[in-house]
Amino acid sequence: METLAVSLAVPLAKVMLPILLTWATARWDSFWKTKTKNEKLLGLLTRVDDAVATAVKAVQQTYLDAIERGLKDDGRLSEKEKKEAFELALATAKAQLPPEVLAGLEALYGHRLDSFLGAKIEAAVRDLKRPAMRDAFVVPGLTRQPT
Image (cartoon, rainbow, N blue to C red; front, side, top):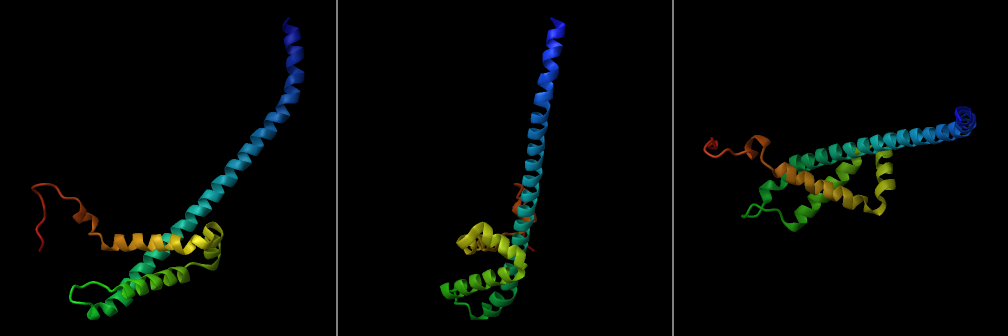
């Protein structure tokens, strides 16, 4: 009985081993391609975040500070000024991205690229308006008085 099992196992192993090795090689290759693609995408999105944050800060520093003197009595921007600031931030962010990154984004998002960047700009504006993290945590009884 033992010799029958061994005599069947050897031919079965000869057939199964190449199949298993082919499958394992394909899975390994797929894993590394996906990992590399994900890392490239992460790098691409990180560059976008940096470009958008820089663009929003630049618009804040140059454009918005320049029109600050012309604000209405309520201290708010007009709709036209908001739109101009947004368009300037969008153009600045796109100008900061290398052509290959912009091409990759256009391939990824297509006609929705401006919408994607617009959402990133709005998020960066919100972050710019937030108080510093040190002021975000308030412990009852230990609040700091403004100086």
